[in-house]
Image 1 (spheres, rainbow, N blue to C red):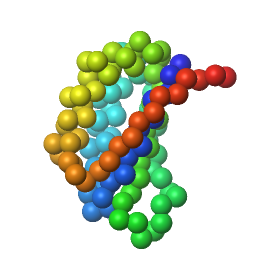
Image 2 (cartoon, rainbow, N blue to C red):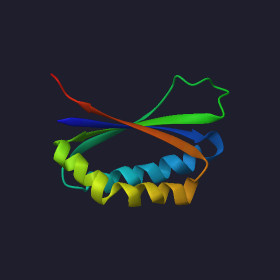
Image 3 (spheres, rainbow, N blue to C red):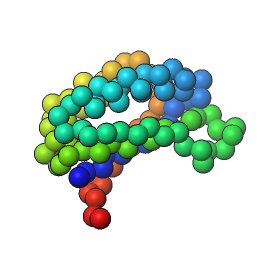
Image 4 (cartoon, helix red, strand yellow):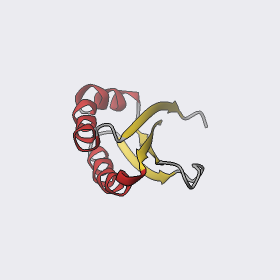
Length: 101
């Protein structure tokens, strides 16, 4: 099992619209072969007066081959949709974790 984590910081005034879009975005990814499940989180460690809100999506992916197929065949188009809608209003970082236990 592979864990694919995406951390996102969004301008506070765009965050509600982004969260709505993110729900559909995650659903699209879950329809891809090898994506088993996903959980969406909102970070609660940012200061209340922060100009941004933070979200984290944790995907469980069957194996590295499925994740590689996502990167090769789908990631660019799916990421471009977010850029088209919210470009300059968010930043994202990603990491891949291999389950040990």
